[in-house]
Image (cartoon, rainbow, N blue to C red; front, top):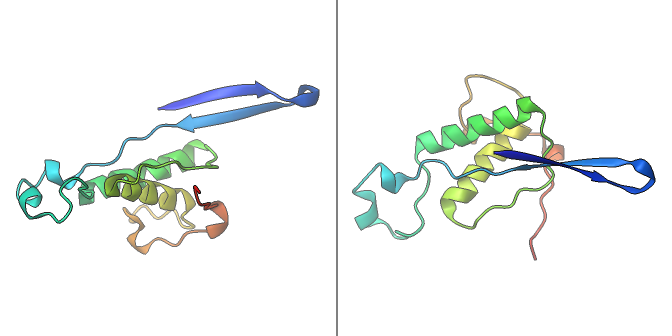
Length: 119
């Protein structure tokens, strides 16, 4: 889901801010019932491989749509961090190789990413 807001700045300048809300990818406990009883952190399931692929594809789509990304806010749950990592890696990938479906072998352009501490 994307929202756009146009703000009036000084001297008649205009600023556009895009906000993209994204839910985490598919979590493993919804697909592998035996994961939960053996999990070290049952409250914090990781993504399935399909969830990582979906997050990667979402990042590629955001890139194609031309949304600039200035900040990423993410919940500390593992599945959320994994989703954000895949999406941002796809957004910053140097090559747009259709064979790449996750960030595993992707080469990213670090100048497209600005990381800051929330503290």
